[in-house]
Length: 204
Image (cartoon, rainbow, N blue to C red; front, side, top):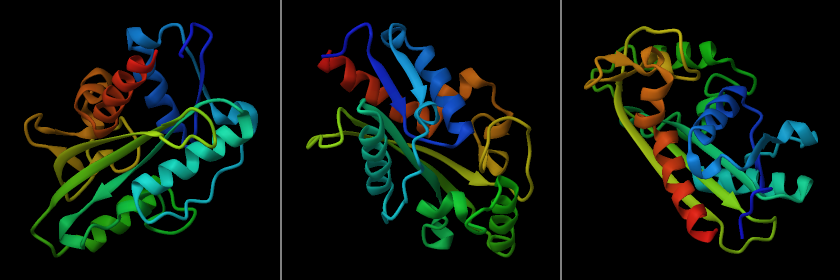
């Protein structure tokens, strides 16, 4: 049962994801009475992402947050899939250019890998997992997708990750050129979160 004093932990250390998810949750009437707080407030150590799918990694991160806080948690695992690269960078999107790569490092490596490839279709994926507790046998799992194509150079100053090189044809701009409201509506994360909030509300 979800009550007015419900606290939900965001199981991520990625500040871009924290900001984006908090803004999305705050904009939903259903969550106005909830406290949505990042796992850093409990000094939760980062989970080792040993899964080979977005679903596996999201479950790992959600369970880790539940274990360390004793609270329900939402975990996000997301990334960019390029069919021309056999699905890469996929689950390795955040560390495509190395374990401690920056967003810029990852973008530069991806653009280099795509430099001679004409087929530039791309898909963002976001899997959100909600676990009531660490032993939750039936976590809620939602999946959102966002279709676009890769630019040859970055455009825009908003967003994070691969947003500057992800082009949305019907918007005629990159994800990094969208305002927050538009991105919330269109993005893979926004779609997954809408699904998740609906499922959580049904449990209230």
